[in-house]
Length: 96
Image 1 (tube, rainbow, N blue to C red):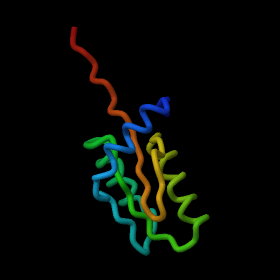
Image 2 (tube, rainbow, N blue to C red; image 1 turned 90 degrees about the horizontal axis):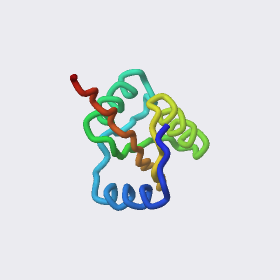
Image 3 (tube, helix red, strand yellow; image 1 turned 30 degrees about the vertical axis):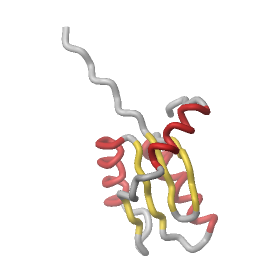
Image 4 (cartoon, rainbow, N blue to C red; image 1 turned 180 degrees about the vertical axis):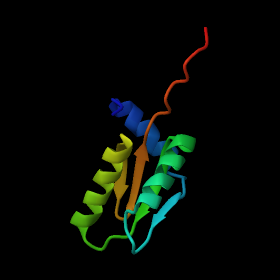
């Protein structure tokens, strides 16, 4: 997991403010296909918003925690059904 300072988190929240959710979870919940799409989105963008359609607060929080653990990502902010998560891109190995 990435260690982020308070300033890093503040900066990421500002960047995420204007983002639209790239993943919209429906009634079927957190499937392998959804996990795969989240991985693709994180690889492409680092910072993404996810809309989690869970009626129960506990279920929603558990789903978001599972997503973060599965992708080794950091929860930046959660407001209602929207979660903003961040995963830094892996540094490319330099050829010698």
